[in-house]
Length: 465
Image (cartoon, rainbow, N blue to C red; front, side, top):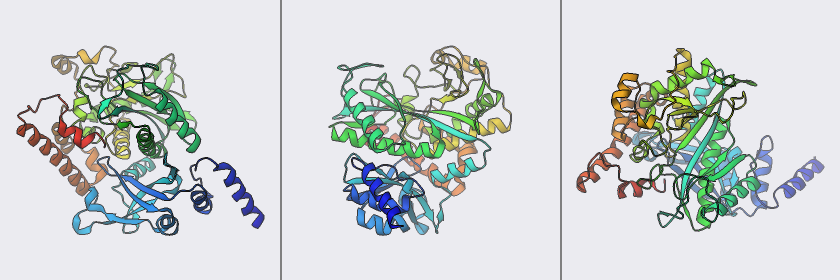
């Protein structure tokens, strides 16, 4: 036994010379204290996403984390994050040690948490909503998010480059390489596919390989935080705000989704066609896009992005290789079983990613369960559709404002069904308060409710969210 533990310790010394890495079961409880101590980690930041997409956090000295927090979690006020009423607000955040990661500040690690109520996983926490939904589905759900962001300094873009620009026009090229290098060396489960400059000035994307839904969302949350820390060290600031700059491309969080049954990809039919099951999944999302928009696009600023002609969808249509549609079927050459998927392009990055994933899957599964038929693929430029054409074709539009999205969610069943009545009411009240504050700001500044300008109110509220 002594020899065995000596071997484990020696291997850990080798593996952790430079960075801490993801702690993997079944050895996590045995080696994580050793790894933290050996790497000079002094603090552990424990984090979770609330229903509005705000990353909540507490910081603990590493000794307290190792001796107390990792075993019993920590208490917090659940009413202040929208989970519980004030009269019954005590909750517990429990670290999930398979999400333990080093940050760019080598003396600090981070870990994501589950949320517990009365000693049990809280059913209204986004991760648990998604987990409970996936357990009822006879398929494996894979997600590949594309998170777009602006690299800024003093609140402005740091270059005027465009799509796929290179250095020296792309001022952020070195930053992207440093971020990719950090992920590859210190967090080996991040499988990076590609990085490039996006359409907007100083707008970027670093793409990860798809994974099963919950592990992918965990990686996405960590990715976004780590990206900001690397930018901070380089004197930049990252924003995931959907529309930080007027008349510039907005930043989305496109979700690539595929369903599998074991090794069998269910969205593939042949090299030119997706399956009927995929079409039913698409039909379900298109049918319910308006009512789930309060989750997928849950801020005032979200609807400044959903404007025709600025790299974001407006109409609830789908098509092959059509980037003006809400749902695109990627088709660079021919369709292949391993890559057949749908891309939902409406989402942005300011939401509870677990809940956003859940409402999309739920909508898609309703389509499958009801054997809904998708409309014919739309192969024209959807940005040029008029309201009269939409009415004639039976095409729905995404909501035009947060206020409209609130009303659609109230009329729908998906968000309420996933959250439960009480939590849904709290969620809607938060969004109504947000909408009212924005409307008051516009009124006080003599601005129209129809304005597409990005206001100071939005910048203060969302730029660092």
